[in-house]
Image 1 (cartoon, rainbow, N blue to C red):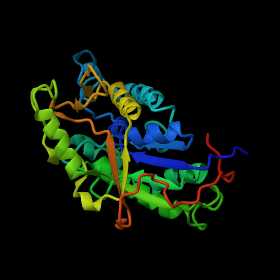
Image 2: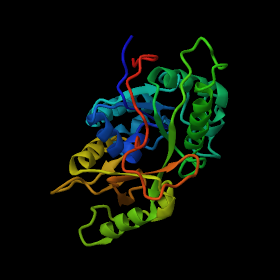
Image 3: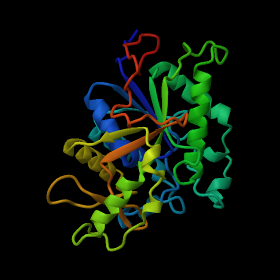
Length: 309
C-alpha cells in the first residue's frame, strides 16, 4: 500500500481557475515542500464567459464545448503549480456548472446547485478517506461572493468532512478519517485595498478600468484572518502562470520586472493579483496572531491507511 506524505492538504473549489486565483501561492508552496496537495474541482465551468474571440465558439450558447477545453487549461495550471494531485468531484462532468441564480443554467437538473448534498458529499468522502488530509480548504457559507456553485462547494465540503469521520457512513468505503483543520478562504481588507491603490498609480495596470475592493470574493476585516501565506517572487510567479493557463477566463497583465500584479476576468476590469493569501478557521476562532503555516500546531505523520492515486 502506498505511504502518503506526512503533510496532506486538500482544496475544494467550484470551477477550474478558482484554485489558481484564490490559492495559487499556497498550492505552489506546499507542493514544492513535498506535501501532498490535492485539488477537488466540482464542475467543469461550462457556463464561463470566454475572453479570447478565437475561442468564443466554445461557449455554452454556441458549441457548448467549454468544459472539455477547461480540463486542459486546468491540467496546464496544475503543472505550473508543481503537478498538484487533481480530481473532479464524482469524475469529470458529473456535475455541471450552475451559472448564476435566475439563469436557465441554474434550472438544469444536472447542475451542481441542484445536486443532493449528501450524494455529492459521498464522492468527496471517498477522496478524503483516500488522501487523508490533515487540512482542508474551501469557501465560506456564502461561497465568497454568492455564486451557487461556490455555496454548494462549501456545503458539500463541510458535509463530507463530517461524514468522512463517521464509521457508520459507508463502512466499506475506506477507513474513516477526521480532518484536523478546516479553513475558509478569505481576503484581508487591508491587503485588497492596498492592491487597488497600487493599480491606481500611474502605470499600475494596463487595464483601462478597475474593479472595486468589494468585487473581490471573501473580503473580511483583518482581525478575522486566522492564517496568512505570503508568497515569494517564485510562488507569485507560479500563481500568475497558473492563472494565465486559464486563458478562456483570465487575462493576466504582462510585467517587465517581477511577477504580474494585476489581472482581469471577462468584464475587463483590472484587480490586484494577490500574492498573499488569507484564511479563516471554519469554527470561527481567531488566534492571537495569524498562523504562517496552515499545518502549524498539528502533528503530521505519513499514513498508509489510504493511498493517493
